[in-house]
Image: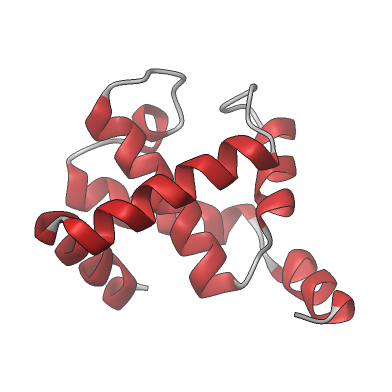
Length: 113
């Protein structure tokens, strides 16, 4: 991706778009936005959070560093940085590839957006 394109994506990505993705994922997982953004390590909540990050990357073409910055400066996931985001997205990509239920959830949310 060209640096200017990444900057355009970063500038056009709003908190409203983030909340839309979080709400869509939450509706599939039966979670609130607050639960998704909590610091808990419960598996279903982590999977939902990682799916949000994956969708931000896929749908809005935001880089992992930018996603990490966005979560670090916000009210949620204070420990997040690009390596946290990288690990989370890699973990959910593995699940999407190997777990049919996760793949269905990913596709459902992607269609909702």
